[in-house]
Amino acid sequence: MEGSPFANFVKESMERSRSSPRVSAPFTWKRPFSADAHLEVVKSYYDYVKSRIRIGVEGYDTSLQPIELYRALESLFKACGEFHNIQIRSDPVTNELQRSCIVILRGEGAGDKALQLDGSDIGGKKIVVTSLPPGLSDLSTGLSTDVLAARHVAHDQRNRSEGVSVTGYDTSLPRDDIKNALSNHFSTCGEITDVFLLNSRALVYFYGLGSNHRAVQLSGSDLGGCTLVVKALPYPKPKEPAGASGWTRLRYREDKGGNKHIRCERNSGFYLMNFGLFICSV
Image (cartoon, rainbow, N blue to C red; front, top):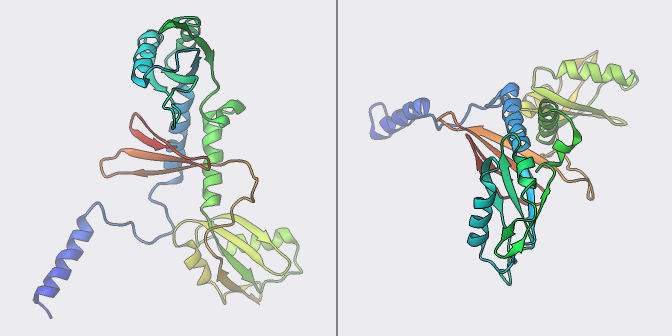
């Protein structure tokens, strides 16, 4: 087979795989991004959203064409600061504009300048200008973007974690001792996000590709004179029960050009938006 066309094809394919920047990451529990990089990207997103000034506008003629309203509002508000965007919605059946829209500005003092335009004339009608809360409810809590990013990353890791069921340990020991022993025993498998103790078994959750595989390989290992039985749990980790509050999840990646891409997913839908080096869909 040495020197045959098939052997040469396999050899060339392997060489391309080694040198290609598009080849998949090796199967390892480590993520392509470090935790610090993940945190940095999420914080950048929060900082961006926080920097936007949202202005509500209503009172205009809803029979206007969207482009006419957009140009009129852009001409009016662009002197207030950095003009970013206008969110204009229309009725899907009648195509008539909704009675309110949102103007997005950036820059110091832009919000105060925009509010001074209350009562301005647009198409023969006086508009009502109001200040709106941030685009993300998290930013209304008063917490810094550093804290919000750290909390979000921790929540994201828990949602994306995989678990194993562990039995065979000494259930007569104190719960804290059991948790510490299991955490130490499985610490080499990946980042542990949760350890739950049930009546006769424990659930250990990991964040990172390959973590479950490593943990299952410890089935039959010794822990304090007891033989552990480790089985993989179905993926994914159980979601929040029906009726729980809404969630927002940020996902990110970095392309071969070094540009960061972030995707913001919500249980209420999504839309696309561009900002700086980031491409975000919500």
